[in-house]
Figure 1 (cartoon, rainbow, N blue to C red):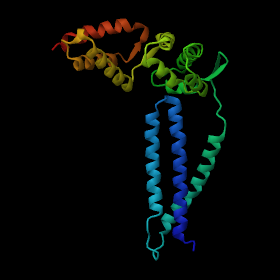
Figure 2 (spheres, helix red, strand yellow; figure 1 turned 180 degrees about the horizontal axis):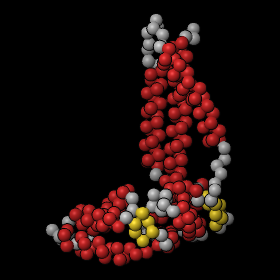
Figure 3 (cartoon, helix red, strand yellow; figure 1 turned 180 degrees about the vertical axis):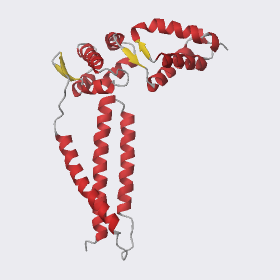
Figure 4 (cartoon, helix red, strand yellow; figure 1 turned 90 degrees about the vertical axis):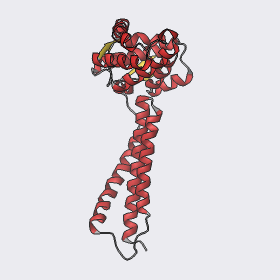
Length: 255
């Protein structure tokens, strides 16, 4: 017999399905914009965990005599209606071909810029500068013969962030090609950028015997304070910035 308990259970399951679809959609969007697979995976795992809690509550053994209270029945009925609408809307959105606002064509490749423009908002608040930066990156990467087949496919999907990240990891023609794009910009220093730069600073100094008489962590902490205090760095002026950092931090970081 289909009791009121079963009705509430079905409503909870609908809600869990909606949560799962939203989690999948947002995780994919996060990965597409940032290229950070671990962040997207972490978010999806959290959503799956929440879905699990809802499903668990749906199948929790209840007293067959005691019916769900009227307030909860009404709440889960409303949630079920919203969930059905949300599921339909999410599925339609996921099936609908994505439309890009900014696309450039390089070597026969249509390269969407939208995710790059959104993803660089933290370091370049001005949208025109972001469009210029992402256009430059698209032309430099798309026209480079060192571009691998999988990187080409990612560019065509609009996942430029992961290609740029690959290029910046090692010295090579791709990194050299896109360097000029960043030299044209004045970048905002975010906390995440500062932490990444600090880790890179420590690794480089520990590998360089010239810095053995310095406390590496103390120097890099001082360097990051200088960078954050500057707030914005013109990358073309990086040599001058390094000179200022060394003048401020080398002396005080001696062992």
